[in-house]
Length: 410
Image 1 (cartoon, rainbow, N blue to C red):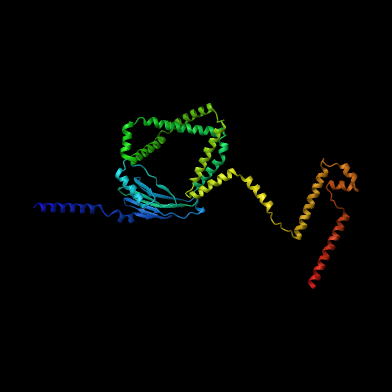
Image 2 (image 1 turned 135 degrees about the horizontal axis):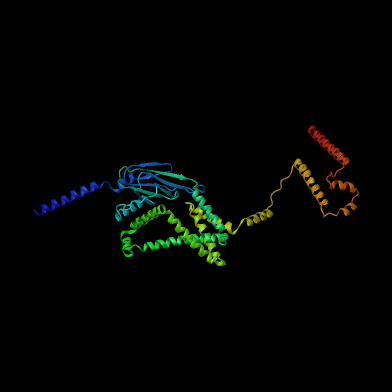
């Protein structure tokens, strides 16, 4: 009787376990392939079912033309209650999703999520989108490719300008006041946040943060940020007034102490600005090898400017001169006429200038009248010399033509 009772209880337990397992549905391994989509630029994937869907993009080859390439995953949805998970593999995304469900199983604050995510095109990336079970929940996932991202190109340009302008900015009084006012306003906001945090019960709030984990902390920070945006919109006048007052106080403090005069302090400011510029250039592209090369190139151009390049180029031409190109007969005659006109004009200008002593020059000449006419702009040749020159030139041309005809006969 006792054995029969044990068998009956065991059969009931097995039947209950079987029913529970059947209600849980297929295993993650069997459903993983259905929930994973490999997406490429230009693809539009529609999903109208709740649950977790994972979109993966395989890394592409790196070429210099793709230095500022960016991929953007856009979600066109009619709801804002969804969770996003990013990872390198499908397993990592599913692990994050499971950990989130174990720690915090529902969306307490209903925070908004970004509907546009930038993806590194040179790295394997998977993004999980978990839609909660609401009525008429649907979205379209679209992957867009931007070959030349203007934001990244602008960031690279800003970093380069900041690097090269750092010596001037560190000595600029206007930059000193702008930086001081910005730092003062930012510091005042941080101090205000610190005093607001004093209103919360420190011990209980700290214990709540530790007990609920990083997920609870993230939700609280996200909610505070959303409320801060709401405050900026509803109490815009008060916010602007607060910023103006803090900016005025910061300006007074900066004016009291005056700009930086210590040389070493200026050097530290310059190095800080240059390092910031290099960081901006490095992170202006997902192609980190190319951005690192740009940083090295900027450093080389800063320490070895173009003057050294031109000097090295002239030194190279001195050692290895270029081969001279010979002129044709027509080019030779044309250049001779142009250079003769130029030399005669320079001679006329010199004779008319105070540097030339006209009386000594006249004593050395056979025909001073002709020299005076030449200085006043007349031709340096007389009519007889011109006629004789034309006769000799015609005679020379005829002899050349006669010689060419004899060569053809032979």
